[in-house]
Length: 85
Image (cartoon, rainbow, N blue to C red):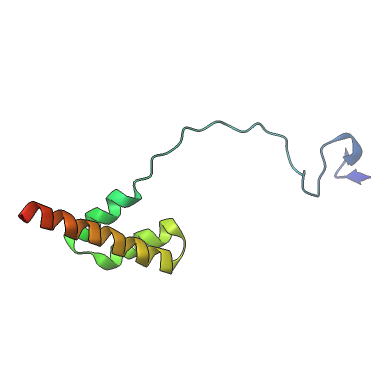
């Protein structure tokens, strides 16, 4: 089989699951998750809708984001109560 002047049998496969140039995976350091900090920061300032959007983007679904936002706002509420008393 001739493909633009190359012998396909002698080179890597051009189609299928193992197609493409063979490369080695680069080891990356794990990135810290700053989701909770960002959401609490937004809730402290009163930006509930923005906190929901951030949570939705990180967690994937609207339902999970609403649950996380509610959880974090409850934590903030309890922290405020603890500081008052």
